[in-house]
Length: 87
Image 1 (cartoon, rainbow, N blue to C red):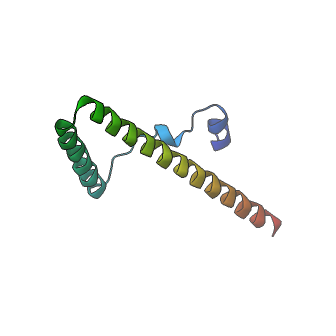
Image 2 (tube, rainbow, N blue to C red):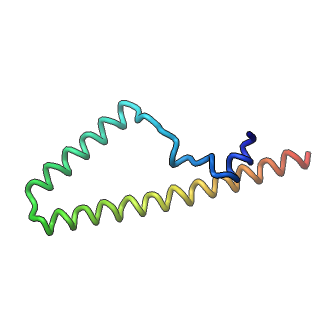
Image 3 (cartoon, one colour):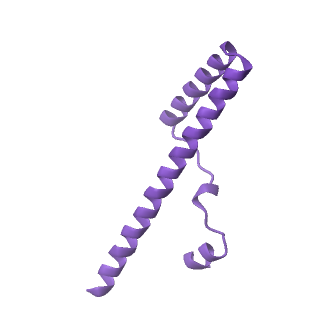
């Protein structure tokens, strides 16, 4: 199945591709998870909910920025392909 077919039929999705984190990123993730657990243990339930909302909002913002960068990269790739076809 071609890449275009995979994309059309929904078989190609970078968000669903399983990836293992490199060790240096896993260490950062572990530190962040530990800090969040430590902070959550010190906060009231309302403050924990606020912290969770902030974390989710930050993730949404980062996801949106990544999506925009992905689309910009795809557009650049398409322009490069068009330029190559013209020569």
